[in-house]
Amino acid sequence: KRELSPDFDKAKYTNSVFGMYGGTERQVTLLIKNTLAGAFIDRFGKDVIMVPHGDDSFSVTVSVQISPQFFGWVFGFGSDVEILSPDDVREEMKKQAEEILGKY
Image 1 (cartoon, rainbow, N blue to C red):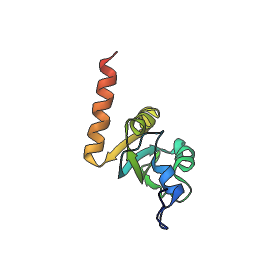
Image 2: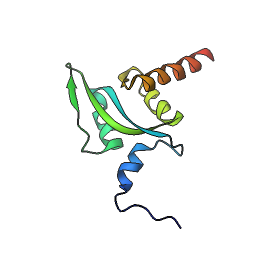
Image 3: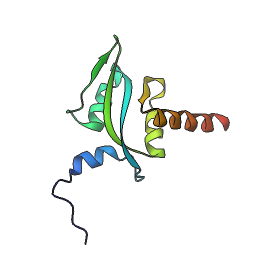
């Protein structure tokens, strides 16, 4: 049986994983419409720091595991959520969207 490190934060880990697919954990900055604040608090907890961005949006930097499920989760919010950084994660989201669009 594997023992967990005493520093392991189960809640933090659970918030970073999307579905059953884990991936490389990264710090990702998202631009989010204010109307979705509740959804992001539900996902990442009340300690998430929301930085105002214009009149109708805010940005957050969160630790997530990059996976197809993460991109699907972001995609589910449509144009109300944008990955701002890091650039390689932003490009991967674009690639995922182009692949889906290519099927239609």
